[in-house]
Structures are given as structure tokens and as C-alpha cells.
Amino acid sequence: MHQVIERTILAPNVSRLVIEASRIAQVRQPGQFVIVRRAEGAERIPLTIADADPGAGTITLVVQAVGKTSCDLCVLVAGDTIRDVAGPLGRPTELIERGRAVCVGGGVGTAVVHPLAQGLAAGGVGVTSIIGGRAREWVIFEAELRRYGDVRVCTDDGSYGRHGFVTDELRDLLDAGAVDHVYAVGPVPMMAAVSELTRGYGVATTVSLNAIMVDGTGMCGGCRVKVDGQSVYACVDGPEFDGHSVDFRQLADRLAMYRDVEREAFAGSRCLVEALAEAAGVEAAGVEAAGVEGPA
Ligand code: FAD
Ligand code: FES
Ligand code: MG
Image (cartoon, rainbow, N blue to C red; front, side, top):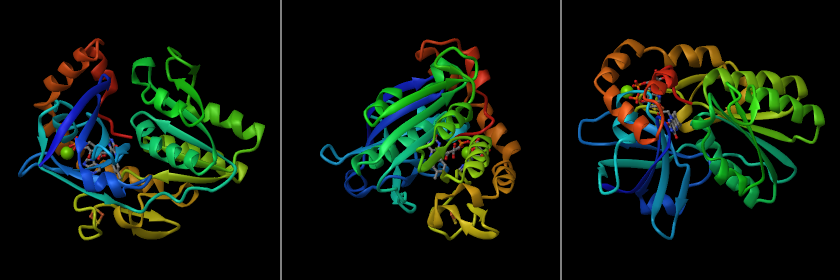
């Protein structure tokens, strides 16, 4: 059992959970994730280790409620428990050791790039983060990322930062030169667009693939993705890969495989998401806008 120490609502459908996981906190590295099972018989889902405090023996997870299981986790509060937290899983990020990196985060992917920015800055690499959300209230982790360098914010509706997509800001940085590597985490179309853009500039790009995972150990085949024409498993061979070699279309198709069943399972949890949105101080109607079209 892993106790929830703290729960903060970051955005209308995004919660930050600090949970007890002492061993994982000691050994986790940037880019790694855990597979969480809230209770006996519940579904297992992968979540990135957004932060860790080895002294306190805690890790931080940032969860976006996009379906039944993520919603059940988002509504946990301090004192609740999570049955299993398996990890750390996945290969740690290959961080560049000099020069300037741009970390691009879309939606909840912003929390996922946080440990990368942290690791890069600790190694002496210059970091610029570009983060995006559909509107001001969905922009998360801005203050945390500012600890590691410059942060540029973009919103789809222009309510905060630049009115536009993260790729617009990235294009300006690429045009100005001096970008050695781009790390991008977010919805599949965003990672595909970032990779397409950087390809034209010849700038190496790492993306973190959010394939469907069950066991996280290379046994079930659920997270199969195509990279450089080869089938690999995101859980053990990734989750990070060269964005210029990923078959994003196949990834998007596989992510949609169970959508009908998922929508049905989520129907009963909508009231919980609305309660979260209210707690976040925004119109519950905004949750509809946040949609269930998929996580980062
Ligand atoms: P469902 O309604 O079951 O599914 C909604 C959509 O989520 C599906 O259409 C599918 O695209 C995807 N999905 C469903 N089941 C899984 C699964 N078992 N594994 C992966 N994707 C699934 N989300 C966060 O909010 N924060 C994170 O830090 C985070 N890190 C991730 C790290 C990795 C390595 C991966 C692979 C995914 C990560 N995700 C993260 C995505 C998260 O796992 C899914 O949003 C979650 O599993 C959805 O489950 P659900 O039951 O709530 O939604
Ligand atoms: Fe089962 Fe990767 S999650 S093989
Ligand atoms: Mg599910």
C-alpha cells in the first residue's frame, strides 16, 4: 500500500499526487515511469514520475482525468492509499551533456518534461521550456520549470502567453539557431508536428510515447510501436525514441483501439471530474471542453 501524502488540483482535470514510494524515490531517473493499480482488481495504468523527494521517500505523479482509471486516481485525497506502484520502469532519458536543449510540453506532458528539464539543468545544459495548454487554466508546471531556465507559454485561445501552438514558438527558436536537442512530450499530434518541424532543421528530437501499457515488462505486447520500421516495445525499449523515426500514425491508431469500451467505462465517472473542476474554481462545463480525446 502506498499512502497519498498530498493532493493538489493543478487544472480542471489534472491532479498532482505526492505518494509514499521510498525505494522508487531513491533510484528513479528522468524519463522513467511507474505502473499504478489503485485497488485490487482495478486497471493498471502507466504514469511518469514527475518528481521525487528521496529524503521524504515520496514521488510525485501528475494525473489527467481522461477516463475511468485516471479519474479514480485524480479524486484521491491525502490519507487515501494506492494498492500497487510498480517501478521505476522504462529506460532513463539519454540527456545531452552540453549545449542548449528545448523541452516542449503539451497539456499533462508538461509535467512529464519536468524531470527532463531538471536532469538537463543539473548536468549544466541550458534549458528553454515551451509549454502549452488550451487556455490559461490548463497551463501547468510553469513555476517548477522556471527553476531550470527560460519558460515560454502558448495557449490555443490566447488567454495566456503566446496565442498559438508550441510549434510556433519552437519555430522561432529554431530560426534563431543554437538549439542542440529538442525533447517533446504531449498528445500524439503535437509530438508528430514537433518532429516534422525539427526534421527540417536537422535538430535531434526525443519524444516520449504514451502507448497502451499493461504489464510494463515487455510481456503483453500492448505497447508495441514502430520505430525506424522495426516493432519495439515502448515499456522496455522506451518510452523515449527518436521522433524522426516514429510511426505516429500507427501509434494513434493503436491508442484508439478500445475507445468504445473506454467511453462506456468513463460515463459513470463524469460526475467525479465535474467535482474536480468545481474544486479547481472553474466552470464544470469546461471539463467537456477538456474532453476525453486522449492524454498527453
Ligand atoms: P481510458 O478511458 O481507459 O483511456 C483513454 C485513453 O488513454 C485511451 O484511448 C488510450 O489512448 C489511453 N490509455 C488507455 N489505457 C491505457 C494504458 N493502460 N496505458 C496507456 N494509455 C492508455 N497520463 C497522465 O495523466 N500523466 C502521466 O504522467 C502519464 N505518463 C504516462 C507515461 C507513459 C510511459 C505512458 C505510456 C502513458 C502515460 N500517461 C500519463 C497516459 C495514461 O497512462 C493514460 O491517460 C491512462 O492510462 C488512461 O487510462 P483511463 O482508464 O483513465 O482512460
Ligand atoms: Fe506489455 Fe509493454 S506494456 S509489453
Ligand atoms: Mg482505462
